[in-house]
Length: 125
Image 1: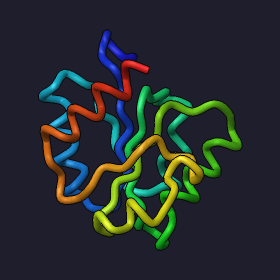
Image 2 (image 1 turned 30 degrees about the vertical axis):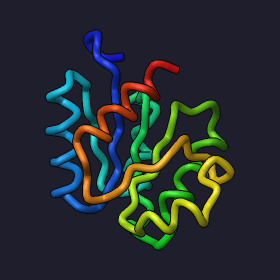
Image 3 (image 1 turned 45 degrees about the vertical axis):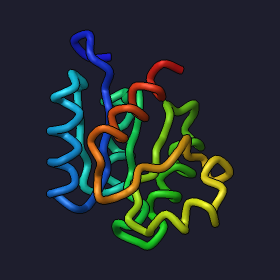
Image 4 (image 1 turned 120 degrees about the horizontal axis):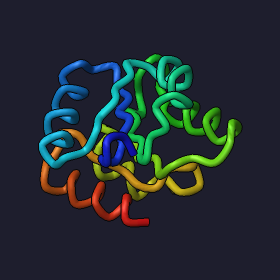
């Protein structure tokens, strides 16, 4: 929490996606921090202390999102981490996201209502 608001860390190499996430989430009264790579996020996650993390699957490398989760979990307990993917709905049925360390999946393109509903539910845990 920062200034009474839940902190959400959004990680994506696409500046437009980060800006869209920031606008949607801040309009719903969340504090949003951003990172353009998993490496950048790992450097600052201790300072940010997010209540929830949204990370893109494909950034520097094809599976950099899953690598981020693995490295973060080695550091210690983590907040809920959601995968952001444009790989399509078929991917969701083909992969066990929980086994990879994710709490769930947000699909690109972003749907504001669905995103906010899932964020609200995740932060109630």
